Image (cartoon, rainbow, N blue to C red; front, side, top):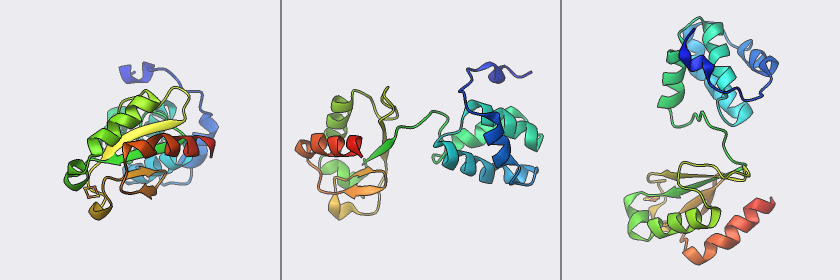
Length: 163
Ligand code: FES
């Protein structure tokens, strides 16, 4: 028994995970597609799904973990209801992205990479989003907010926490 299996359980129903697994062939080539489906369904990759996937595909647990941690699209931690991304690419950086990031961190009380305790917000930084002329950019749930200034942060956070 690998030690990694001893980690805390998340309360996710194993039946839901098995339902997802059944949609895919039980060969290791299905691993990424399975993880994508799990991420989409639960908004993260729950602990139980890692071990169930390893069992289903008959591959070592660490193989599932290494794929789940390699791709940025996958998260092993539950994400917040609202996903905030701040572009830290060069163009946004020179236009004040760091101050925007710090203001968001201060207002929510979390650091980049974390999720607020109430599950309302997750905060991430990203590199160039390809819309440099609009910098600095803050993206919430895929919606772009360009030419950001620190004074707009509070209003935006309030709007999204109500949605
Ligand atoms: S650097 Fe932010 S969009 Fe390009």
